[in-house]
Length: 153
Image (cartoon, rainbow, N blue to C red; front, side, top):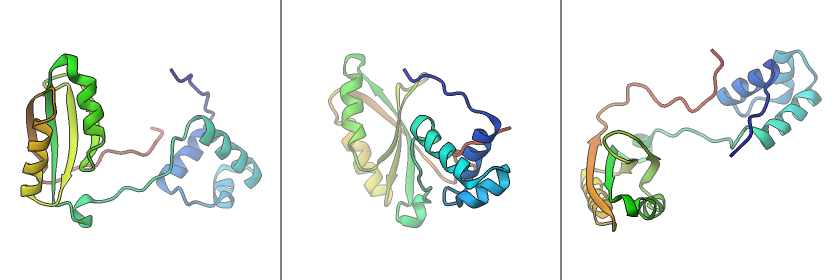
């Protein structure tokens, strides 16, 4: 298990800046923090080795051709749980996969180009050895995105 890394206020502010714009220059971050750009560079490198997993972008699936998105609960035979997870992780349309408590032990975010493709994917999922039931919920409209960025409140 990962050990906790002590973050001071400047580290927290750096993470906040990078989360909102990972392309921010070291010079601009230095001005915001009131420290040198070399100090920012050292802090960022340390954060990248200890705290920051990766830099990424957030894409609107509908604008890149995925018109149908589902949040799908998957019921699994307990002894096959990890086999099912391994199989689903490799599916290119499964964009998120979560082990969960509640109604379904596995939750998947699935992107599809249309309803027919989504039905085909759900059928494929239902045929995975160990899957007992597939319970899709089609996302009609996104009201609030998952905030993947870091903020200090």
